[in-house]
Image (cartoon, rainbow, N blue to C red):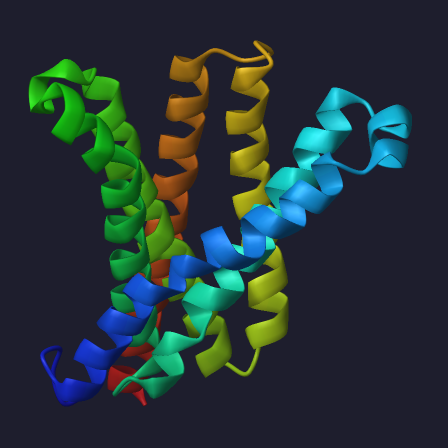
Amino acid sequence: MKGIFTRRNLAVFVLGIFSFASVIYVQIPIQSVIINNPTLKLTLSTRALILILAMVAGFVQEIFKALPPFLGEERVLGGIISGLAFGITEASFLLLPAIWQYGIGALPAISYVERLIAIVFHIATTGLIMYGSKKKRFLISYIVISLIHGFVDTLAGLTQSNMFSVMGVELAAGLVSVILLGLFVYLIKKDKTQVQLS
């Protein structure tokens, strides 16, 4: 590994920022088509609709976050960098308008905690996908992580339907993020140990 602060890794970070545009230009339009489809509205329950919309978010975000690392010095590090850039951009997109309008102290602390959890989540998910890519298992890693992402987003969607409390969903999202990050760190350490032993 040549280091973190290289031109190629800076390019991964910048592209990770721009990958957030997939939410606006790909994810939301697909979700709008689903929401505005009269047949789906009549045939699907609210929960099923939330699940589908959340899965769209998971699959779209994860594929666009996973593209920039292919340009980096090392794919797994690129996954961390791209996930970090995406998470920071998402946090800025969601928090800055309210901060500019009402001030930093006007938002409840849970808003900041939620965004921190989301940043950790994006780092872990993209890192795991790129770890899978390194092990020649990109597709299966992408599908599994996208399903997990969709599951977490489903819980968030269900809070809007008053099916779960915001605090409960934040605790669940935090737990999933910690588990994914722990798994990612474990896999990286396991690889380093195997290299040292061989």
